[in-house]
Image (cartoon, rainbow, N blue to C red; front, side, top):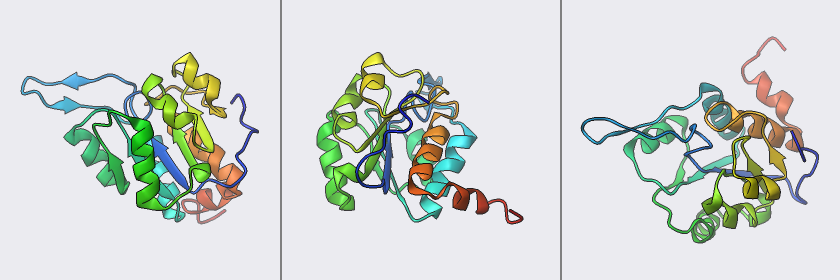
Length: 177
């Protein structure tokens, strides 16, 4: 976990994510009827659910549109979803307006060039292992796992560690501990 010890000045309260290459492995499957199919990792889903169960906010800014994205994020209880983003920096401003969270308290995981305007501004820029070199260069945290294979889980654990809430998160599931 390179740069895992570098935290922002204020603790994170909003986790925002890209989808393709972060929550998925970046593969895009389209069936014979034109429906898009995506593969998500269960550990990333548990991490997002845990994040929100702890009273923290979650969001997505993605360049693609699709019902698969909407279904998965609704299932995970992610309320702030911006699909079809042509300018992620502009959409970050919209997310800040909607949530009232200052940019320094936002964590964002992105993997490719369109994510750079967000990664350069947020307090907690993160990248999966398979991210473009330019994204890794600005990230304070780079996961060991690639997108779609538990990278978000690693990022959430890093953030919860910064917040001093990782043990609390584990206790949500391990009632004996």
